[in-house]
Length: 445
Ligand code: ADP
Ligand code: MG
Ligand code: MG
Ligand code: MG
Ligand code: MG
Image (cartoon, rainbow, N blue to C red):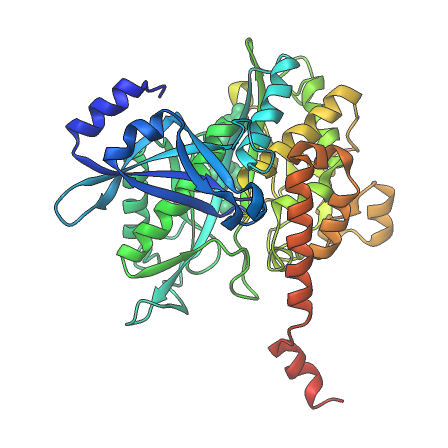
């Protein structure tokens, strides 16, 4: 909703709001916030709230550290759960980050997505619509409130209670989201034990990214209230499915969904095919952003419904990109690599710019793969033009570093900081000796 400053002031007074939390997302995707008492509301609404950017991951050095937060008034909401000891409420605003010179900050992921959306608009696309399907696990908390590795149930896909002990938690998550203006389309137990999915309706990418960040906060908060720990880690338990965040997308013009064309045999427009061509061309670089942790690559392995190859299909669910059967306004592409550790702003900026590159250059996608790729051998895959997704974070980051379109989508500032941080993360992982190595090598050598 497009609130004015005056409307926000009125609501804050009527609802006894005592604190305002101004949030933003750092380069690595973590939500940061500055909380101020409501006496500071004018300062916040007038774009005068400052913070020290040098203490935020990937932002700036000490000597240029003063930054401003410009709240996006349409993101105003009151947290349904957070009240202080005497009933006062806590509200939040999501902000764009500005420099001391009052310029949009190049290291702000939200700014990168805004820029990509502006580019799409120049090309006549009024919206880049995105609907995600985030998955997560619920683990039990111990008596000290620390997460254990004990899953909350033994349920499977679409199971019902009592196998699905997460039902009540999921309902409370859904009800909370609805109070926060989410249109929840479905919530269900996922394939793995202790694993759940909540789907909410697609919106334009900037709002979708904001919603993903809010969603994670809600899920973690409500899970903890119920004695569980919710994690969006992609593969917390080896041997069972990991958690993804399938990303459904479509471009709209003033006339509606630009991916639909009833005269095409698959019902897809040239724009959709070219966008798909762009996604395939930049797939490995996008993976660094969509799957930004060491652990992400333990999900992208054969046998657990997660993609391993760069390919697309209209008819089966194994490839990286699926074309869901719905047409009309729901005509869309589903990118299945993305996992919930992705920074939604930079990832969506990269996806959009990759797709637009395909549209600009009229890239034709490879042929649709209608067989189960996991049953094809290497030669068959080669003949079908199917290549591999990167199998480690380091490989993905190298592909990102070599893709100027994707680098441009997130900007040099974010790209440099991201690549540097991810190389350090990978090295730290590589230096660690795991239990698997001890089990397999200690006594054998
Ligand atoms: P799946 O069949 O892959 O499990 P879901 O039904 O769980 O799919 O989720 C589908 C997602 O796609 C929802 O978030 C929905 O709002 C979204 N969606 C529907 N139409 C569009 C569209 N035109 N553009 C983008 N996302 C869309
Ligand atoms: Mg789903
Ligand atoms: Mg579904
Ligand atoms: Mg799912
Ligand atoms: Mg899906």
